[in-house]
Length: 270
Image 1 (cartoon, rainbow, N blue to C red):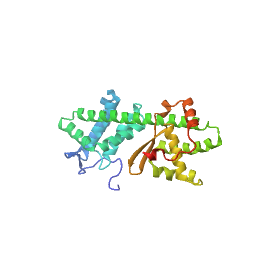
Image 2 (cartoon, rainbow, N blue to C red):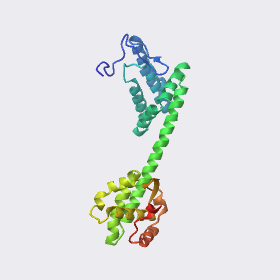
Image 3 (spheres, rainbow, N blue to C red):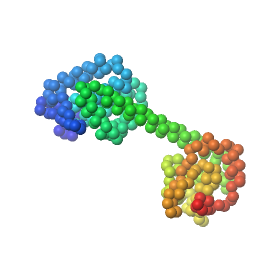
Image 4 (tube, rainbow, N blue to C red):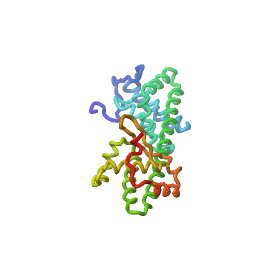
């Protein structure tokens, strides 16, 4: 904002309160300037010997408690924490995740700040809160990485097996089924969404919806996807990420060979 020049410390009579219960930052003017200098010195001296995670969280707390600017103090505190996390080798995905954690747990965040102030600036409550967030976000990132690896393995196997089908008819069907699986790898879809997403592939067929259902049934027989009924004539369709660990090359071609030439109903019968 125009009334808050970026990077300018609060001057005389420029005081702020924040948090719940309300907390007053360093008094504007000389006290704010002195507090900021001591903070910068402490970062390079006393805090240098701390564990990197503790140092990052301590920097976050002390900057937030001081509130040296008229606006943007919370964002700057989180950016400062991210800077120190980066210096200790953590990736930027964790910085974003931690920022989300503070936003999602805003009440607990403010309470942790208040608890530190109420206990003579003993950082234990805030460190426990912050480290819990690091653990939680690392677990979330690990789960996300694991899902992405599973999707990559699924995608590789999908292209490898389906592209090796030899007959012209099976290769045409395989092309459509690859498109279905590619869409489902992005997200679970309803039948209506899948019809809309594959419209271009089936447009020139005599009965597009019937052909789509037949292709879906084939994928169900291969156990590559699962279908869940979620209402009257409503179904959710998703890939089975464990499929690459279950199917063998021999079993895949055996099942393809045994598939009937036409089967429309399948999951719609249930």
